[in-house]
Amino acid sequence: MTRHVCALVLLAGVAAPAAGTAQAVQNATLGRAQQAYDNLEYRQVVSLARAALRERLTGAERARAYELLGFTYGALDSILKAVDAFKQVVLIDPERQLDPNRVSPKAYSAFDVALRQVLLVRQLRIDSTSFVGGRGAVPIRFTVTQPARVVTRAIGGAGAGSYVIDSGAWNGQVNLSWPARLANGDPLPAGNYTVVVEARLGQNTSSASQAIRVSHGSVDTLPSLTSLPGYQYLPETEVPPQSWRPLGLAFLYTGGALVGTLGLESSSLGSSSKRELAVVGGAALVTGFVMTLRKPAPRPAAANMLYNRLLRDQIARRNQDIAKENVARRQQVQLTLVPLSRPGGAGPR
Amino acid sequence: MSRTVAGLALLALTSPAAPAQGLAVKVGPQLALASYREVAAGLRYQGTGFGGALSARYRKLSAEASVVRLALDPASGSAATSGFTATEVDAWVAYDLATYASVEAGFIRRSADPELDAQSVGAVRIGARSFYEIGPGATVLFRANYLAAPKFSGGGHAGFSIDLGLGLDVRLAGRLYGTAGYTFQRISRRTNPGGTGEIDAAIQGTVARVGVALAL
Image (cartoon, chains in turn orange, yellow):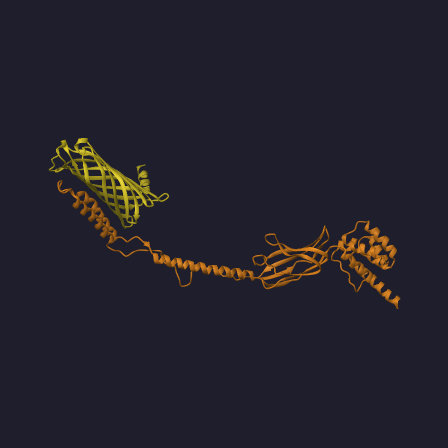
């Protein structure tokens, strides 16, 4: 019975690497190593995989070679070597995940140990979401394989800005909730961004990124007012009604000069000539008469000026209220956030 | 050519004035009519002359100056046998106390040629004036000045000297203004010829000036 269980487990362990061969393996040595693994020739797998690693391989082939070594060492009970091989796998492909139902427990535990020994940010997921600004949040999930200081940022947009989403010490599965708002409450400007999660532990760093697109729904803002319905500006000058005032004033001034002249004439010198006064006084009276007939000059209308000032103040207050309302409307815009591609993982640096 | 010059001059005169930094300056020539009496009713002169006037205003401060040269001849029935030429210089500086009134100070200097044919006078003006805009661009003015510390070429003193004025300033077109001014002057001069006792030697004159002015 025990032998049957072991055989099943072994088959399961064999089945998983075989599934990985679906990826194109171009390198002949690596192909032979895969063939040897399929034939359970573990000694030959080790030698062929190591030989393949000395050759020029693509990243996927290199990860596959280390993965074959990890599974083989696991099958040979060389757990430490299996862990080392799996560490190389996750360093090359941080997103690599083993299915515990399809691989041997030894290999899976070795893979799990390897993950815990390397600082990695992996499995960054940002779901498509849509919500009204200020009334929702963007779920951001990722895994940090070791306790580390993790800073999450959104980089990009029209101004190529950098917006800190979160900064904290995290380990394991992390779930963030990002309201996608700026410090002043405005929604994140529409555009393409890259969400970057960067973990730092001593000298070790790891990061993962995800491109997203943020779009805004339409906002119905209110236009500013230039006038109030039913209220119109009044002219700030008014033409006074025609009157005899100009002629009266000319009479008054001319009369003053005449009375002064008559009153101050010296009795010993006799009455002075009046032709000079007649010339100038006559001119003044004619001017006064002409001005009486002419349309009077406009003069400031204090009441209208006061009314216009009150109207302007009222319009300014209304426009301030409208501006506040528009700010609120812009902040409550419908935000739609869509991830642009599969999460890109960048290994430790 | 002359038409061009005349056109340019007309354009300058009729274009609207643009006071620089609130400073308004006007200058222009004047024609004058005058009558003059001295000492006794029989010693009276009449004549005409010409001159010029300059005025400036900056906010509540204003200044005026005028010069007129009068050729005075004995009036009909006058005891005088010959005429004389008088040159009168007047100047004022005024400060507006209200939109229609200001206080002012200045001086008057009138010299006669030949010197002994009439009294030359110099005095300080202190007084006030009232002005009112009776229409667009039209202002009337009434002035009363006390002539303080008068000096006479023939000696003597004056206990009471006064100068009254009526003025008119009308904008004719653009920068061109018409001006008119009337002054009545009474100086109660007393003199003591030969130490025989003081006698009245009053001076009384009127001048009318009519001219145009250009606002700069």
